[in-house]
Length: 490
Ligand code: SF4
Ligand code: SF4
Image (cartoon, rainbow, N blue to C red; front, side, top):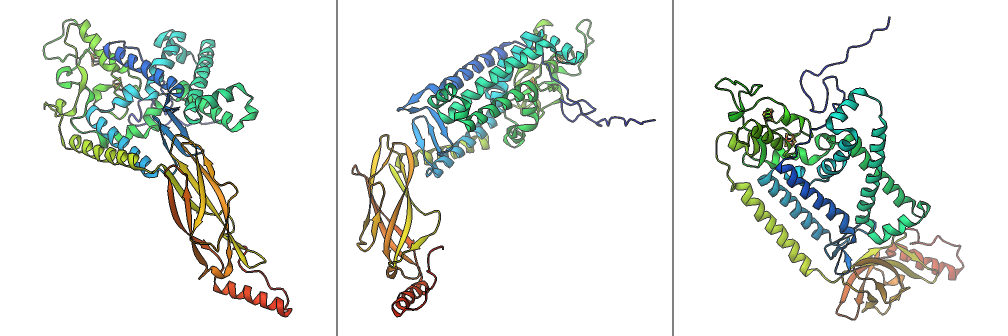
């Protein structure tokens, strides 16, 4: 007779969304439409509107936000950052990180509860659709118990898929621009297979996230949630349950004996929690500070004639009976660090050159020897034109009349706010190289103020190769047999 192993039970709670046997505990939170919920909903709709409308907005004739990854050009609020702006971008990134640290130190996980797309779209777009179709949170719980896939859940998933597709297209518009996106939408996917695959993959990721993964994103996937412990301090704003007032808890509202706390153990705070925790157990990593338990408990307190605020915004200091301090070391140091990094960012932004030229070696052979004893070098010139309009860059050589410059396009045109690369060829005699190199000065000008020279060292034949070449030439005069050509193929 087959022996079925007993499921292993966890000795204690591992995650709020896991049953003791390791299976998923689906969270179907009861809505608590109180004053915090109303405020969060208003902000959520504003944020959704902003997200949808940004790809259509322009500033200084440029998209408001465009993250052109293939070209590595990022346009933010009318300013384009080119691949050569690494320092600027790093300073911007550092400033944003410090700002997040500062906001978290003061207001705790306000981003998670109020601004994160995961919370905003889950609680104010996907969850309301689910509850409307499935008969509220109780209907969803009944369907969970019944198992199987009810037709109404199929309909819900179909709607989710359409929404996911819309969100994925909007998301893509931030990377390719709205005009390109519209062209792609109007043409066959065969004409843009890579973009189509990216869009399909993003749609699938969004669909899986909001239909299945849900709060797991906050609990197990998001690194920000795990960073909290180092970003918080005892005075950071958090959602707290006041045990001094609530305990000892006891069920019932009638004939409550003296000495009991205000918590009537109704469980509404945990039934409304989108991450399935009980705030009365203290500060937990799973708490995204969404304030739903505040609204749920305030409603109960109002109904039983007690003051609201048993669960409220507060701090660990308040729980210890101390006053919450606003000014403390980290709250003073973060703004100083932010000022320094933002100041450096703005100074660099203001003082960066209107054009940046980078000289690069050719991708293949560093130089080629020709039959006539001359050496050909390929040099790539990368132009970053930060002006708004197109500029034509004239390339020439300064002080080296023995070197011939061959430039297929000269002046080289570069549209405003873009980076383009051209290749030029330099022909010089092998005898002009010493120890395998020689110097040239590139002169780049564009007639409207930009005029610079750049030193560049050309690789070429070293003394041994030159002697071999001269010997070969000599040998040829003497009628000697062919020798291999030095230099080419390096
Ligand atoms: S909602 Fe308030 S009263 Fe009800 S269990 Fe939670 S803390 Fe206690
Ligand atoms: S404990 Fe309260 S604030 Fe925290 S996630 Fe749950 S409902 Fe939101």
